[in-house]
Length: 509
Image 1 (cartoon, helix red, strand yellow):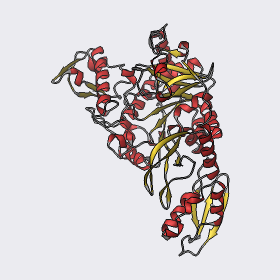
Image 2 (cartoon, helix red, strand yellow):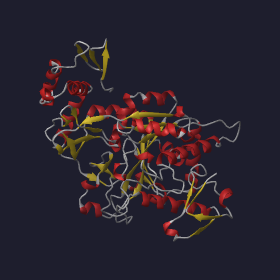
Image 3 (tube, helix red, strand yellow):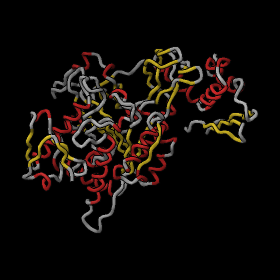
């Protein structure tokens, strides 16, 4: 649903337009701002128990009054009220018990044959060649926890190349496009384009667009990238009242990475995908430096399984690792993700006696694949259900920081809607190097991610016949292979065989 927009007409008329309601215009002389709350607006707020928003109205300047009216007019009040009521009500409902994911639901690394991998790789490349894959990047967050106010994708983790997360991912798309263009052995090779849909937030949108423009889109065509913003929702008290950040503005927060579904729908990008012939959508988070964007093997597996949705998973490193895991909700119920806090210690430590692994071992790492038909279904279903997660946080308010609730949806909220979901195990050291915490933290830092990249790429180079010299211990250094050279370690023999590289360095074309 598109949020209402405010427009001025004839210099003084203020109108509110929305897809579902129309508010009567109020006219004042061109030189005047709003001098009292609109009665109609006050009455609407009373309907939802939010009239306290205007409690300090008489203390506001004319410009502040104008700002507050615009802030409220830009809210879809019926929708927000429905979300608040449904989300608060759901907190008191019993939750179905969880069960481990059946072993045969997961394609494990050990269980895959070389023939399977080659088949899926070729199937995925052919599908990409046919233009049937789109890629969605979740990048609404700032690098605040990394000590930066820039969009997280602009962050440089200190690799020899100095490339940002955005650049690394763009170059992986370029590499896959080249590989897909070579998949057809007969006839002339034609260019292949993967359309990249990049979700920003109101806090990162402008900076993200400028970053891509100033770097000439990292070699991609500008028209193969679509930027779109996730929504925001007011922060609320525990009894559902809006929190005021200032006397004339609401405290708001992005609606979570699961906001991607509503954002794709209301921005009409699901329609855009259909018009381009896209049938499958790869969806991932920006802060994983090892992400295999548009992975042909994963795509081929997904198509082969005929599932509506799929997720890459890694094995939980230890019982108390703070990661969400895939489970079945209820006896024979749907596949979903539970946070680590929902597993008591006995469940988190329980061992599957047949496999010797943790019973709840399949970690969610935000690497997903969906059919376009399923995305349309989810966008409608989640909006209809209107149940959001309530995250208790310190909210900036006009009285200083106050404890309140943020309303969020998560990317994994889609899985209970899926008629079928496939889980695909990947190796943590090959595909999961998150960058979440500032340098010096205990885990998921730029340093830990950088070392994972250097170690993986060093293995690639040695396997391709290359040699390394190094002036510091090898466990603390390594080489970086440009994504333009190799997507997953392939085609490196011509570059590396018989050559010696001094670590740390970048190997590029």
